[in-house]
Each structure stands twice: as structure tokens, then as C-alpha cells.
Length: 266
Image (spheres, one colour):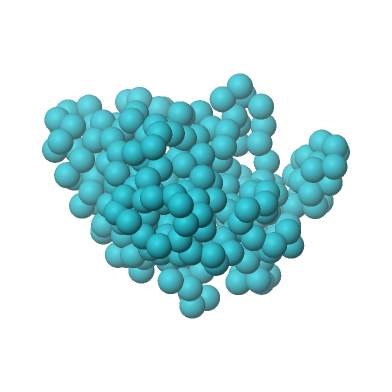
């Protein structure tokens, strides 16, 4: 299951891994917390939300993913009871064994709040006394959470953030690009507000950068595995089990967990 803030984040940061899981026989789910209603320089928010909803559904269909509607608006992804109750209901309904979500450190509060909400919703999945909206019975299945790399591989204070593992997305890069292209309404907005003069080429460049950092892949996506407490076994790494040779642990990152500074994979 992929949980992202805005309607094109899944394709940009996570789609390659999702598609590879689908190809490995997994059922995949696609959810953006935000409607994307502020993602236009010319349309009214309600009209933008309608366009973005249509685009996100088209992208999910292209990827073979079950689509879940948004539950927030742009700049209103807050870590609050209302949002947590609704997201927890979806996590219980889907009962995922893997959640892919944003980096806890990123350039945008919506992204970071989405990561926090995804983690807490996963934690609450098995607590019977926690009420969701709508109501769903608690589940006890193990779930492993993976955080995507932040945009630009930097946190909000400009510090470099490198992944703990790389997924080789080279074979599915064309489909990943096609899914991102479904979000055609984003082109002008990203040009004007975030300096992404071509969001498709920005995605391609990001994938090539991650591939170079991996030391072996042409295109890649990067992931950091969340601490296991409350979620799964300490050794659980289901992406490694599902993707085999397309999944590469960054040994430098693993060593950094014990106090050694991380670098490119080596």
C-alpha cells in the first residue's frame, strides 16, 4: 500500500516499487491523502480537485492498483484525530503487509505529516479500543513501513538524506513515466511554483541519480525501513523477499545506524 500527500507523489517517488510488487503477484493500493485542490495557477480549487482526482484514478488504473479517495485538501494534511481516524480505517480495511510512504524529513509539511499519519495509523491497526471512521475491526497482521527518499535527497534544513536500500526500477521506468504523465495538469503548476521545468524529466533525473548512488542500477528508488517496534519482526524486510536481485541494501547506511556516516552504496 502506498500513502502519499499529493496526487503525483506516488508516481514520482514510489510507483516503480509498487509496479514491481504487482509484477511479483502482490495486490497494490494507491492513496493520496490530499485532493491536490491547490495545484493550479488558473483553475478554482474545487475544479482542480476534480481534475486531479480523475488523473490520479487514471494513474492507479494504469498501474493496476486499487485507488482510495483523498481525505484532506492541500496544506490541510494535519496530524489530528479526524484524519487519523479516517486513515486508520483504510489501513485496517486493506490490512497491508507493506506500507510505502513519505520521508519523515522533507521540504513540505504535507509530506512529513503524511509520514507521521501513516506510521500511527499502522500502529493503531491492532488496538481494539481505537475507533476508526468508518468503524473497522482491529487487525493483528505484521506490517513493515518503508519511507521514500525526500525530494532532492535533502531534509528541510538542507542536510543530505540517503536511502537504506535501493530498488531497481529500470525495467518499469517507462510505465512509471506513463503513470506520472497522467497528471498532466501539474506541468504548469510545478513549473511556476517549484522550478520543475519538466516534471517528467525531473522524475527521470531523480531515478538516474538514485541508480548512480546504488552503484549498480540505471534507475532506482530509495527506501528507509521504519523501526520494527509495534509493527513487525525486527528482521522483517518484505521488499527484499519480494524483489530479490532488484533490491539492494545500502551497506553504508546500515553501518551509519551504529554511528558511521552514510554515503553512496559500497
